[in-house]
Image 1 (cartoon, helix red, strand yellow):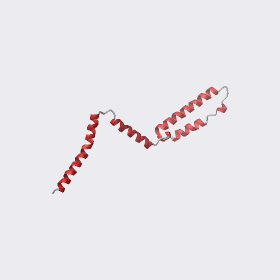
Image 2 (tube, one colour):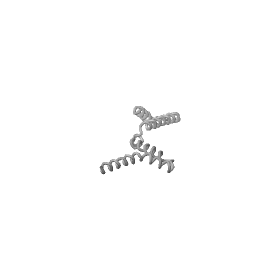
Image 3 (cartoon, helix red, strand yellow):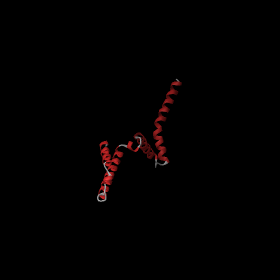
Image 4 (cartoon, helix red, strand yellow):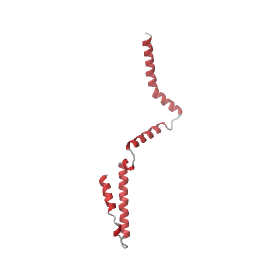
Length: 110
């Protein structure tokens, strides 16, 4: 990626509009615009590979994707479905608590 970006930069830096004259300016302008467009495409490809080039932290991107995934998990569910899901997630904790309470009561009143 770095080599391609360096090459694109050197291609852009070699554009010398001072040498253009009345006869060749149209050809030179087309060549320069093509060089700039190719360099822009190279930059966009590098941005896709390296999110740091956009000034974004990759960890922040991962956290954002995780938050979006969790948010989409809860969206679109009815109240009844959410209640069943809550019960499914909390009944093991309640069962362990109830067993702990029974064990405590049995050992207290022996």
